[in-house]
Length: 112
Length: 116
Image (cartoon, rainbow over all chains, first blue to last red; front, side):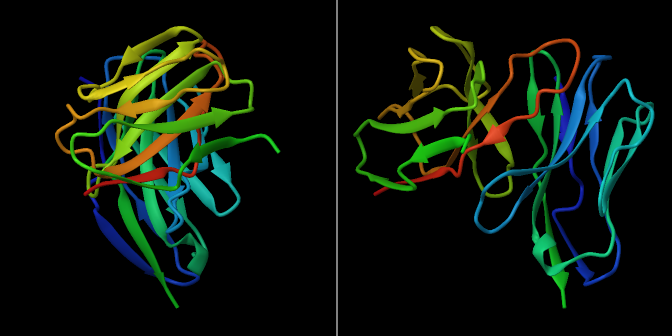
């Protein structure tokens, strides 16, 4: 079975600092996509960043970037210059043609 | 504006009653999904539909039913057979799965169901 593991239930970071959230996954598929979603207190799920497994280059979206290690099945999210608005639950997700899996989430708190 | 709407935002149900959660999208997406979110467990897939008049069970379909009579709508019924229905329910949609490109899911605002 395909699984997604987020080993850090909670993390905190000081405003303006950098934080990295971990995600590992397990699959036998070769074609898949990886996502990080953010869920703020409003509970609206918001896509943060996406990565196609066939692309070696790590995706970047402004202050958000990923470290995608396909052989290690690792997909970590780095948030630079953390802002108070980044406080949220962060979910790592994995998608193939027939399946979509989410991790249990990491609760990130940005402290002023 | 294009998006996904879910109603109601909060729903209360007495034990033994069926209840239907609404999900509508105007993104012209073929695929729609229902997830359940419990504390500490992330999102779990209940049902999904890749095309009108067709749907498949997810990991936790027992006690739930769905229909897909229109492309825009994918209502979820929580039946009295669902033993622990109190949870937050999220609906999502995406372009139909294809080999090339990505198929990110767009989410609605969710419905909080509480069984009294």
